[in-house]
Length: 247
Image (tube, rainbow, N blue to C red; front, side):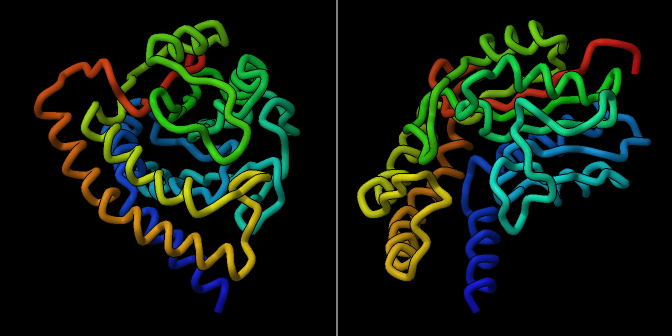
């Protein structure tokens, strides 16, 4: 029964969280045009619950995503540190890191590892925060789009396309949606801890209280797209880059 509830909770998150919808939209619009039809293997670093794996595999038929995480859980297929991947050079067509790098002490090393395991011309897909609350786990860094592009170039990548996620309207609804969890749920050891019955009840209550603001976030994101071409205030961004070298 617990497993069923967990899966239902995860599916509901994928539906109602506007930032996930924005990342899926980015994947749909930009990944097929940038990739090759022969892609086969991708690694999702810091995968957590791997919320985008299925969508990536649908967008690129034949792609097999492998969930990589530092913690062994029900979704991790490979337990490994993003800075020390137990993979051979040039084995991957795609490496993804969704809201991972802000938790990594040495982001340059993580990007270097992604570069190493990618084939020449392979792609890296990254989502990252700019203006938002600190994460439940150790949260170390924030980037502008220009800052992430610079870090990627230093690691040997050429940015292909980047998009801000939302603007000031989505920023407000995101902060409001985050508030119930901040007040009710205390994960002192990160988001993976505190899953006893009492914690689960508080988590469900916090999620229910945040739900109106999450749904309002879809409207907020639409308003941001209408009024702003290049927002100066944004929640985060998504970027696609290619490993330098012949594809």
